[in-house]
Image 1 (tube, rainbow, N blue to C red):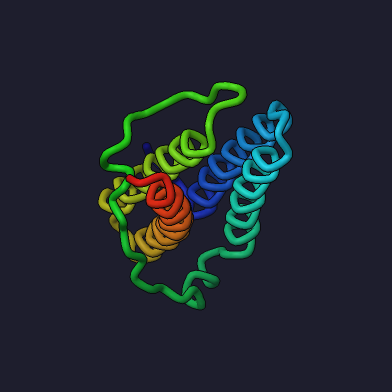
Image 2: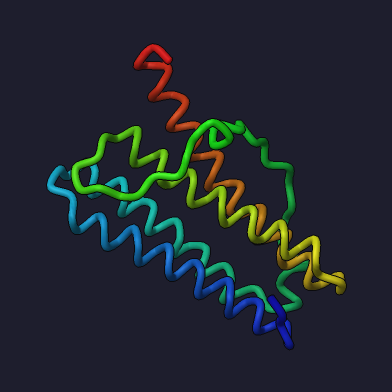
Length: 151
């Protein structure tokens, strides 16, 4: 994947986040249980916050971004890809979202490794951190739920 300008990267990332937001919004509309609708709406809102962050970044905004280490529970390492099915169980909804975040994180890590300019690397590092935060939140929800179920 080649980007000519810094803004091209931001635009690409915004498009990916908007795609994820639309996905979660669409499936939230398909769910009949209000709790499941709310869960997917929360996922969509999180993706919307990523869009807002990206729109406010620019090259200079990255300098103000606070990086911190985000732990990886690695729960996704033990999950296979699944597709959305109407009425799927709560754990499967979390599973689906975790795998989507894992793929986004992997994409941004790969692009960061391939970047040759410091500001471009830092932008992908921001994106990695944001995806890692979202993945951690989802994996924690999943882990907590599975512990309640005796896993």
